[in-house]
Structure formats: C-alpha cells, structure tokens
Length: 359
Image (cartoon, rainbow, N blue to C red; front, side):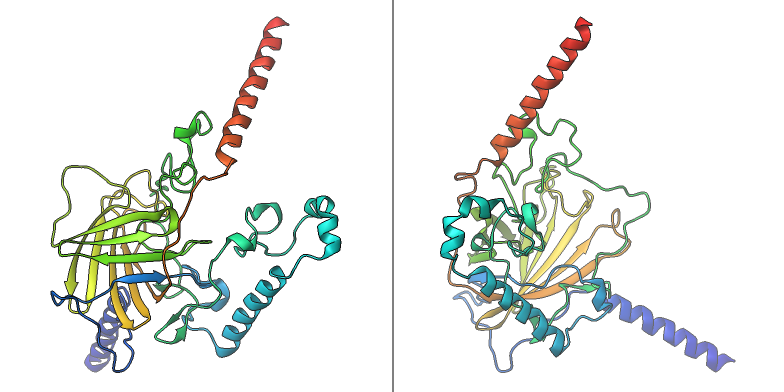
C-alpha cells in the first residue's frame, strides 16, 4: 500500500513539474555548428531586418487538437493551396473583363481575394496590397500548427470567472464599447487615426507590413515595426517606471542572458487593448539568433486577473531585405466617410425629432 501511495505521489509531482515546464518559454533550437555573432561589446548581434509573415496563426485550429506539428501531408496541402490561390489572383485580367470593368466590379467576389480568410465586400483589400505570408511557420525545421505552445491545445486559456473583458474605449482595432464612437475623430480607434497598430508585444504578424528592424546600442534596443513605422524602445538594465505613466507599446525593459535578449513589458496603455487583458498584464519575450537567417522569438503572457493560467508560444523570424515606407492614411477616405455618415444620421434624427414635436 505504501509503495502504491509513493508511486501515485511521484506521478503527481512529475505531472506538476511537466506542467510547470510547459508554462516556460521554449528553448530555441540552434542550427548545428552555428555561433551567434557578437557586437564589439560582446553582446549577441541581433541586428537586422526580420519578418514574421506566415500562414501559421497565433491560435491553433481545433481540427489539429493538441498537435503542435503538422504532418507532411498537411504541410504540403496547406502550402499548395496558398500557391494555387496566389497564382489565381496573379492572373492577368482578360481583355473582356477589362473592357467590361464596370459590370465586373459589381460582381460579388467569393474567393479569398485579400488572403485573410475574408471574402466579398468584407475583404477590404485585394491580394495586390497584402502580404500575410505564403509558408507555414517552421521552428527548428518543424512546421507548426500555431504559435501558442501552452496550453497544449494551442489556444489562449479560459478567462477568469467574472473577469469581464477589459475593453479599451479607443483601442487599436476600433472604438469598441464607446457609445459615442462616431462623434469626432478622437473617439475612433488608434489604427484608424494612424496613431498605432501592431507595435507592441506579443509581436504578431498581420495582413501586411510584417517586417521588424532591430537596432542595438549600449543602453537600449530599438525595434522599428514596419506597420506605421512605429519604434518600440527597450531600455537595458533599467527598472520599470513607477510614475503611473502607461506609454503606448508598454514599458519595456531588457537584459542579456548569454545569446538571448530578454524583454519584460508591463504598464500597457489602457487605449492599447491586448486581447481584453487587465492592467496587470505582463509579457516576457526572448530573442535568440539560431542561424544566419533566423531569429527565434519566444513569449509568455501573464495576467492572473484575465486568464486562468499563463500562455506561452514561439516562432522564428526570417531575414528580410528591408523596411518599407508605410503611408498610413494617404488617399484613405474611410475615416472621413464614417464621420460623414454619422453626421447624416444626426441630421435625420434631428428632422425626425422636429416632425414629432410639430404634431
């Protein structure tokens, strides 16, 4: 009986240890024989332009279950489908379509034209303007089904009971939860006003502009994000600020551990909503070169007021040729039309109120 009890206790301890290990950022898989280059001060050289464009997404599709790695067949089918779609979208417009372009433009588009999963009028952009990536993300050569590695289902953990959803009045994605969202430009979202888009941890790819330029100095590391060309600054060897100021992109401090840059970010701006997290959100990131052309990126998200457990993930940036200009609202009439439509609704409501008063 004592032997059985000891055996059960050992299993419990082993299980707890395995769970704890799974909640830590995965160690990078360095290419055999590769030595990380060094700066003149001996720190690892992480500089350069890197891209995280990929067809792999943050959260795993339920069809994969707990499988982190694709089968060879799944990989082939995924990338073949992307290649076929790209070829279809890159076909030259026929003379008949060009001549009849007014009627052609009125036809609903049932294909995944913008390469985002959206179709028809929900697309917003055609494929000529987008670059979400053509390949499945590899980590250590393994084709991944998701960035998230813990929980094991590759999805964000359950939310804390009664935690609600901390929704920014004027968040990156729009003016969520703001009853007066269309009153003026200042009540619209940060992205619509070209203030901020994706320049915050966790670094996640989008529909386009997925390049990052890393520049290192003695006291800081600057990360220029191609989307709106925002600069995220990581202060080295510093402590988190205590003045109550919550800057956009959060308050990031960093340190080097061997070949790895470790970055901890807290104090997120309340207007920069991160998956409905609370003010206690903390994100830890680890950057490690694993080959001449690949940079391992690991992350851990902790917020005990929002999620029942931390969630962890990894992927690998690949080297890119450069950062491109992002002219955010050049020729963009969306924000103007939103406000113009709202003012028209105001006028109609006022006329309706006046007619009712006259009766």
